Image (tube, rainbow, N blue to C red; front, side):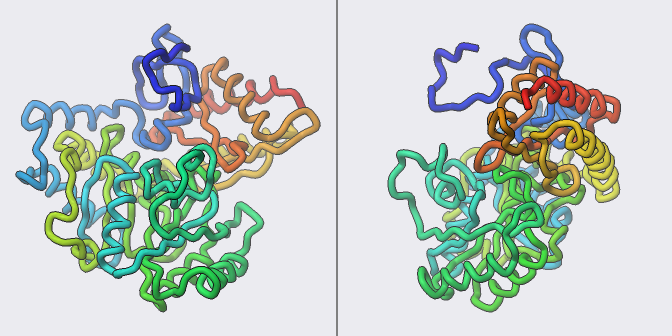
Length: 415
């Protein structure tokens, strides 16, 4: 597929151009059908063109397409803020700011914590991904391709090992690393915040160790450090719960969300304690398109559809099917390694064999699966972890069909 007018710096995983989509199915411009396990990289938890969302957006664009909220407020932004105060499972009152993207939410979160704490240093984690804008880049726990050739990046950021049941890093090891940072790199009273994904996305769908999460919460309380959970990919039902931090038994001070928040329209948010969110001066937060009325209409519908019972049912059905398929694949195919993640947010590690590295096996699978009619996405520092992000609303028979396509593609790989 030729991309003559597109920057060569944009990487494209699949050289096709899709023309339309319905729930978990898409069709390219030639009319070929695919089952979508990418979901816009976690944006389409309710599938392509969910009818209720489409109707809400149609109704909104016929009434009001835009108003810059910080110039003239509009009802959609106000309603989303109220809905979020009910939807986000935190025990304290929250206030919010709407943004266009997860990276923009991350940038504004850094502004908020600097204003609130008077500190600048940030702790982040190896293999993390928090965005592609300049300050967010420095939080990412991976150099290539995000930080290459950029030189010094803004802010004082210190990276820590990410402890997880899905890797060999223990809570004790990670806590010792924090103590080392405080003793060697920066004192605790100069650290503004810790930014962590409850379930890493780009890092390979790894669940944060719950024991470490509780210890981290206590450490932040002890030193007056703001705990930020980045749920841009794991939020809005991906794990079977509204947000992934609910699996850890903790509450963050600030929560970042995006991706599936508006079912495909650009909308994200930072939500946090009122005293934090009000720290920047009046006018210190804002954005021309942030909280666009059409995106707000979509988000309100998303939150109406994502009841706890429905999310649990969707997540359980997908988890059961994926776990069963993985067990069969691991028994048949030597390159298929461990299953990572939780709920419907699942990754599959591809191991090195005599013929190829795990990353090479996964790259071959992506191509073979596309030929079979399934679209897949890699993740992990070595790009050797298959991440599965099909719509939660995927029909059971389509999920079975899609997993069958992946299995047939696996059978074509050289051991």
